[in-house]
Length: 136
Image (cartoon, rainbow, N blue to C red):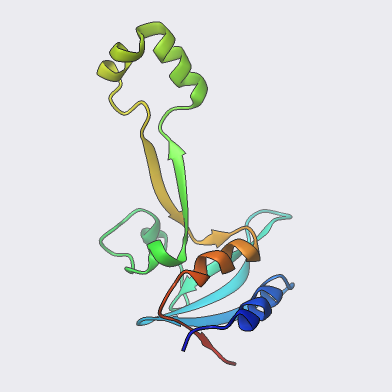
């Protein structure tokens, strides 16, 4: 059974609170959302898979659960800054810079377990088909 718009609004309201705790079932995985401390004064919403977040999931593609691309936030980071790209292209020219720096315009894609706002988390989770809200 899919989650209704009223339920999504209630979920977003819960997640904006001080101590949110929302649980979902996504396929064989249990997802729980909780507020996590990022720095001294910053808190984000962390997505736990089966009650845990492992450090190996951030780099190892073999050991991590298959649901991570669906439930974690996709982030990208350029290999070179815009300033560095301009300097290289000015020094070598566009064609030569592609020859000497083949990955000049490439971006590194990774997944982050933390969402900065409840609205962004709800937007991403609304796109999931097999998501079931677990009642407490």
